[in-house]
Image (cartoon, rainbow, N blue to C red; front, side, top):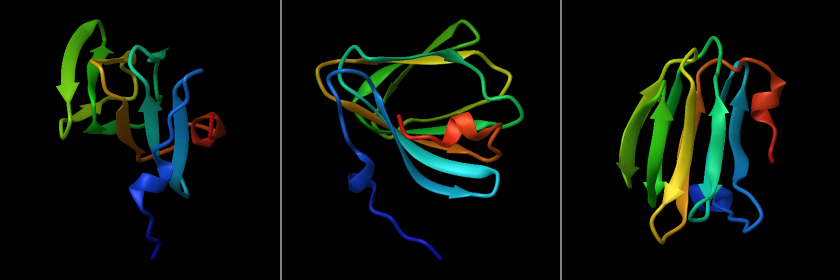
Length: 113
């Protein structure tokens, strides 16, 4: 059993969004993505795994296969691994996402940035 407090992984930078790994077990990982207003996650895919996202705070817009999905605190989104998706933090508050990959495509996805 492992336990963590999410607040330890909520860390913002004015230079770029941050990614903080919470757990990594086998082919699965959980991490927090943290954005100041206007910061964006570029379009990418997660081949071979679904992406589960929970908006912890703030608001923004996911673009998934060209479709915009507006989200705010407590919204949950699941995205197929072959889907192109991106995110931009909007509004005046910082935004944090709780992200789970149930199968890690490769080690690029489990590094703090």
